[in-house]
Length: 244
Ligand SMILES: [Zn+2]
Image 1 (cartoon, protein in one colour):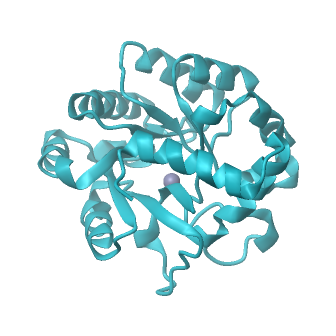
Image 2: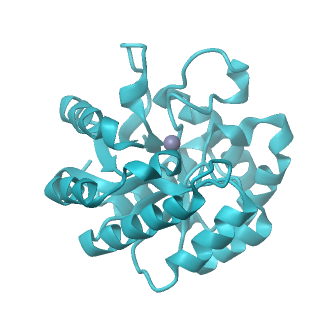
Image 3: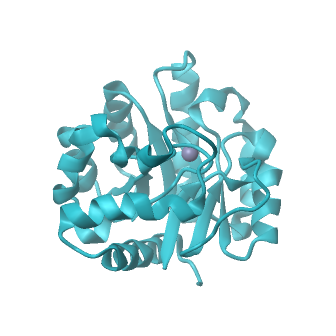
């Protein structure tokens, strides 16, 4: 039923991963050190599709060798990610460099990018960097304001909501849902991170928990959970070119 558009399932300690209600799951690396884990996890799980990329915190590790590794495995992956910017980490110039190179690489390989952005500065920088590129960008666990949302949609980006849309303090996210056209909407768990509010920060997140996010979006869009599952499933199939 659902496609979880962003996760790091190779990091889950629980060996019983709960795929209840899940048709497919995108599993993304975040550092060179877990490229092999992400690839081999997806080899073992037929519902899982791999993405490779280097996350802002580890931007220092992105180099020509990393790029060659990704090119060599291009046929085994459906996305470049998790990549992005995060001004909460200190290495901003290096991050911009690694992010730009990975955007170019994705564009060359015809793959979508799964993007992490945290601060206003990150969004501004992303909007500058992405101009001129035609590959699809997914803003994962979207956490921007209305202006960021409108600019992202104008630039053709997809907006992916995670379990943090269930948090009491995140009314601003729930207020944004009405602005997202159905054909730009995705949902994800970011497993094992971003547990929905119901779990009160206890344990690891699992793909099966995606329905908590879908339930919130369904109410806000005046649709059923099944309709949200189908809309986001079709979008994920199109973006990642999945054969499910
Ligand atoms: Zn992530």
